[in-house]
Image 1 (cartoon, rainbow, N blue to C red):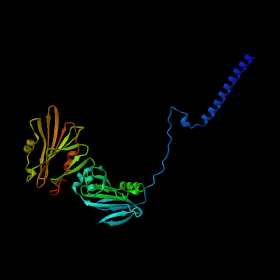
Image 2: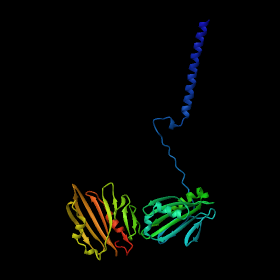
Image 3: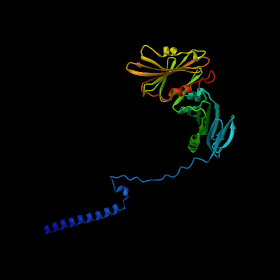
Image 4: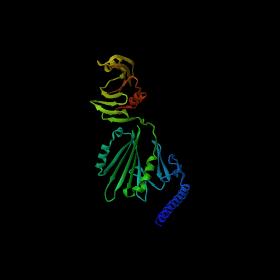
Length: 343
């Protein structure tokens, strides 16, 4: 009796397991048939193409244009134009937000603006400095706030070429920051200037109290070495120097031997003057020589104004190609003591 009962129980258990297995097989197959194809091929990634909805513009625009200098900017169509402190200004009545557009004649000091100088300017106004960004070699942005019972945010965008400076001064109540952020971003990024005398993107200008401005390669490291400005390219070993010398009546009086005496020294071997020319406006000399086993080249330029001579020298190992750089930098040099010494 007990043997029969145990055997019967075993048969029922085996049968139960078989039925459960059949049930799970059917259920799994049903679920598998309903599974998205992306998940049925674990060794293959399927990319599903999704077409994004077109981004709506931040606002309907009225286009502000200026003839000289030739630039334009998009302004929201519901902002009203007024003249404030002599400058064109657009105001949003609902929030009090504004953008003012200023045009100035070129001031070479704009090239020397840094985060430190702007921080000091903001502090002198009794405001809170938030940030400074050099957005290109001829533009920068300053952010600051006037914190009080009502906090006002300020965004100053400054652009320049070698003739003009353009300012966009944005002011708005910080309470409306989220509402206005995209609008201001759209306005600022819509600014387009067809510059008549641009500063090339690969160079930046620096102004000296002696009354001249000099161009330097943006990718090179620069510093003052004694009385000379020194700029160095880590990648190639090439470098350039600026120095100021005494006045001279005419550059055309400088001879090749005068230049050799300036360019050659005892550390060199195999010195050879490759080229020399001198006019009333410019002296140019090129030489090659060896420092140890390495062949080097120098290009030496001299310019002048009524007070001084200006010496620009390029040094580079053989095989390094400076391309148009020497001509670009000499062409961008400008003295403000007299009219441009060279174009």
